[in-house]
Length: 185
Image 1: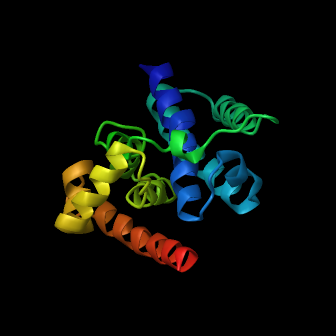
Image 2: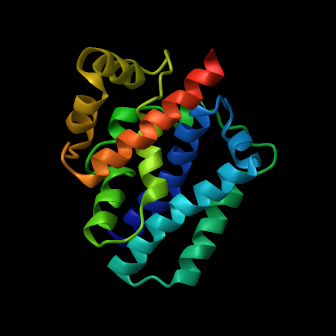
């Protein structure tokens, strides 16, 4: 479980986080997200938030986890590798599920009163993933259109509307939505 959660919560979380945030900003290739220094820093911060959880739960050393993050980011940025955001971000409904790579670490960090602000941004950005070739993205956007984003958050993430997490997701969702709308108009 330790190594599975370490990979899921650090590598997989960082990868999809960068994909969803990159999509908001209009990137098509994940390597372009990592070439953007502020987004690279934010991705590293999201991964570090998850790493703090893994450190607290399983006793991994901070230095080992920092090395693990650097290894993962270097792998993501391997020269000559082109990884489409459409692939990295596919299946958003799965990835925002209560037991998955974005929501589960955020909830566990919140329960421990540990920082999770970058990770919340990933959940918010995932709600804006609207690729017309991804069945889950289509389903997610239809659900938002029919039921609104608030009900969508509750339905797919299991996060209660009265929670602090919910209000933070909404706040970042609205900011990202403005960025995306400004970019596409």
